[in-house]
Image 1 (cartoon, rainbow, N blue to C red):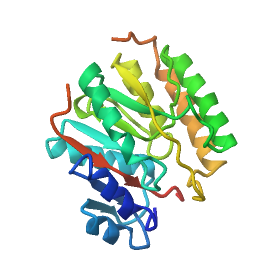
Image 2: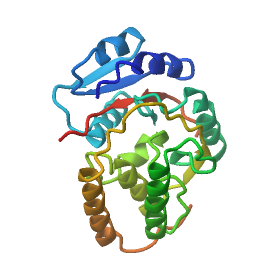
Image 3: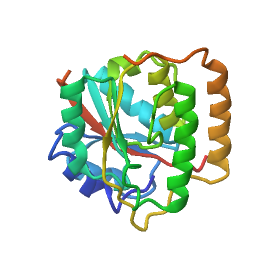
Length: 236
């Protein structure tokens, strides 16, 4: 929500690699939508904030109905570098996985200490449950095959969405690849609420453990790709 300081620059940078960009405006009260449109993005607006997970689902469903086969997601606050996009596309062409996730943890020096260690702790929990090494479970910079996504039963509507998607792909035995990305943290304030969102994550985690009945087995080049920078609020 309210990414007026970053959204236009982000859309412009992403369109250098992918022409189709959609911004999900999750109840902003500033000029985010106006600037995103001016930079060449299609904008879908939630009139009131629904949360990051809900914003992403809106974008994914829009992409699927529009006939796209793949969707690239990145955060609207500028922490993801558009220059990393070609690496995702190269992995998609070479390995043909269902999901490609950005990995900040090979060189996490730029991440705040708390985020770095919380991410490692969460990633280890999810890796243990999935039976796979998932080095960066919380990164929102991802390239996803929409046909595979459409078969998942996702319940998360807020910041636990990254965990929910990753475990859902792993549980179905879909191929997951990680690609190193740059870490960009400036002076922006995290939208994650340390208490409320932690409680939500643990609630999700408890449900996920109950639903997992066994360990999954590991098992084309995108014809059309749409990029969606979600711009979500977590006040609710």
